[in-house]
Length: 133
Image 1: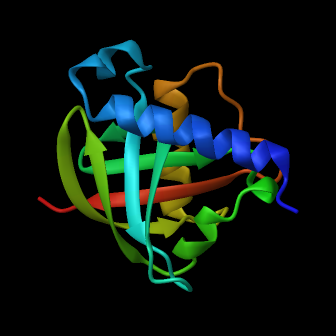
Image 2: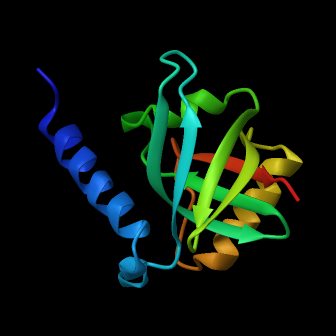
C-alpha cells in the first residue's frame, strides 16, 4: 500500500504545476519553478515543482529531507533537464553536488543568499543545474 503522505504530496505537486502554467503563477512563491527530466530507470518524463535560487546561468535546488525523496538520485551523474522559470523554459544539465566540492560551495552559497533563513541540514542534498546559454 502506498504511503498517504506520498499521495498528498503528489496531489499538491500536480496543483502547483498546473498553476505554474497559468497567468495565476504570481500567486505562488516566486522561488518555485518546474523541473522536468527523464527518469533514469523508468524512461518516463518527471515534472516536479522545486524551490530554486538562480544566478549567472546556474540554478541551485536544495533537496530538504532527501531521505524521504528519490528524484534527486537521478542526478548522481550529469543529466539533461528543463527548468521552467517565470513562463520560460531553459535547458540545462543537472548534477548532484558532492559535499566539499566547489560546485557544492557555489550552489549552497547561491541558495543561502536567496533564502537567508535556510540552513543545510544533515541528510539534505543539493542539485546544481548549469543552464545552456
